[in-house]
Each structure stands twice: as structure tokens, then as C-alpha cells.
Image 1 (cartoon, rainbow, N blue to C red):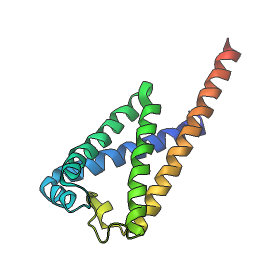
Image 2 (cartoon, rainbow, N blue to C red; image 1 turned 180 degrees about the vertical axis):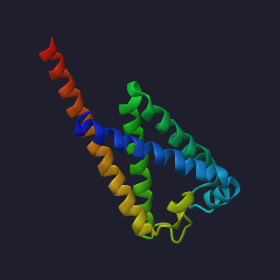
Image 3 (cartoon, rainbow, N blue to C red; image 1 turned 90 degrees about the vertical axis):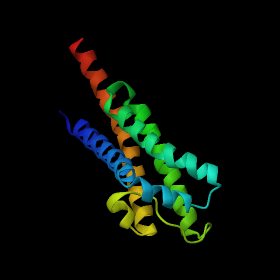
Length: 149
């Protein structure tokens, strides 16, 4: 396997781990997760919707990422989720909502909002790199097929 393909696979594996770990930790402590979601600065109906939609979207991202035919769609969903989470964290940083609890699961919930922001931006950059690597590796495969003819 070429370096770019290995890098792409490592990024995908990291995203899969992230999007398995975070909903699993939320669902394992579901009662606590529900309480923190209810404490969010949203309308009750929207908090209830998000309680189920967020882990569902994260699990869907995993499914899309592991299937080769839907990997690009999985990257788009991952980028959309990370963009939304990062925007929310940005609003928290600007004190738009006041002080609110983090609804993340596991070790991620122990991060400060600044650390969350840095982590999310880093993940978004990795997703961007994954898109670039997908383009590079598909061009390389096409060139190899043309040479082998």
C-alpha cells in the first residue's frame, strides 16, 4: 500500500473510532447524557431531538465510513457533524449561551471548551486531508490502470 493510501486509511480508522466511542459512551451513561442534553440552551423539543439525532448521526457516519462505496459520503457527514459541533463550541466560547455542560461522552467530556475547539479543528483538518488523499489515491489508481491498460 502506498503512503497516501495508508494515511487515508489511518484517518478513516481514527474517525471510525471517534464516532464509535462517542455515541457508545453517551449510550452507556444514557440517563446522565439525557440530563446534560436537557440542560442545553435549546427548546425542550429540540434538545429531545438532538438527544437521539446526534448519536444516530455518529453511528451512521461509522457505517458510511467503513463501506468503501459510501466512504466519501461518510467523510461529508463527518465534516458536517464536526462543523456543527465546532460552531456550537465557538458560540459557547463567545459566551452566547452562558455556562452550559458538555454533552460529550468519555474522556472527551473532561476537556475544556478551548481543548474541544482545538480537537475539533484538528479533526476537521484531518477530514480535509482525507478528501485530498482520496482524490490523490483515485488519480494514482486511474494512472496505474491506464499504464497497465
